[in-house]
Length: 117
Image (tube, rainbow, N blue to C red; front, top):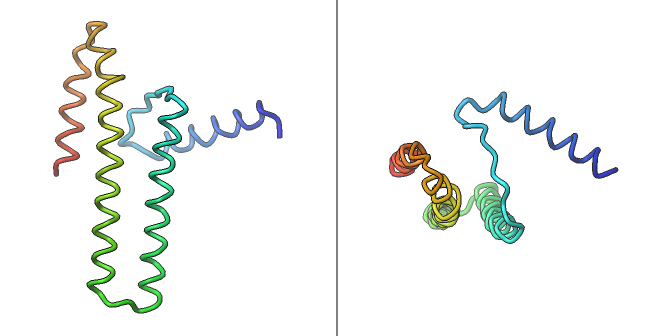
């Protein structure tokens, strides 16, 4: 496949996601490749943990053992959120505040309120 073909497919899948996700702001951020790599590695580890729990359930593992693993997944997701939030504040929020766009602070407060439920 050509690079242009991949870009077209990605744009089409992004448009489908935007239509199906009423909670999304549909804003876009160009991430540094190292940030993408770090976030993707974290997500892949979490995915592996979830698959491990699926296997535990299928194999009839003892409930407390499963609960401990689910707790580890929750911790990993919280860690992912902390990294993503820190990057967001250091880049998106800081840049917009510097340019005089204070609405980003209200947006950040709303996000924090949702995260702290």
